[in-house]
Length: 193
Image 1 (cartoon, rainbow, N blue to C red):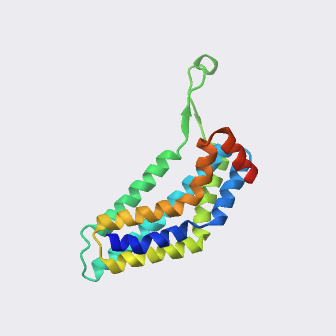
Image 2: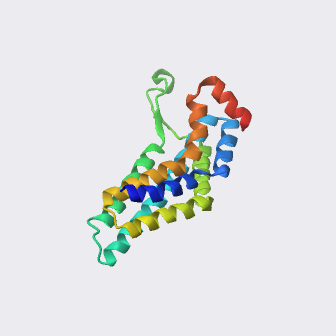
Image 3: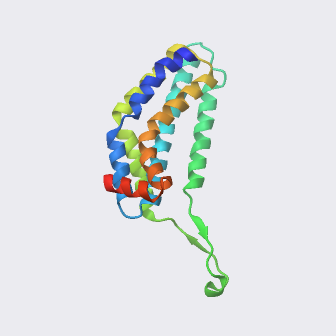
């Protein structure tokens, strides 16, 4: 595992160097309604990154199964984890109930749909991950290292998770600083954006 990490962590750090992703996140933070829009952007970016890496891991395991290597539940586990991730994201992005004043509404409950622009920002995050070709090329190299290493599925998942975390960092860090850094950090990030 140490040899695999020694080969993949530099590739993952290279995938994290994405100035365009950071600039878009800063532009969103500097705009109107920065908190929900920036979170939607991060969710779209992260889900797309995880799906791309999950599909790549599924391909590595499928190739190993066809070549006669040991793929103990590899393709199936990858597919199931991808479906679970999609269901979880769908659950997070569903319309939420908002309780209204029962006296004013005559004891009716309304379904309040989220701001339609949030979907646009989630799609923008997904689009930014798809067009971030330098990161995708480096992530493909991570998957090639895994294919050559013939590591157990659990180690592959750990390596892919580390690569995903590094790749998602450029989208998450500006948003996290603006969200949790307090008023001074938020003002600085908006000034930079």
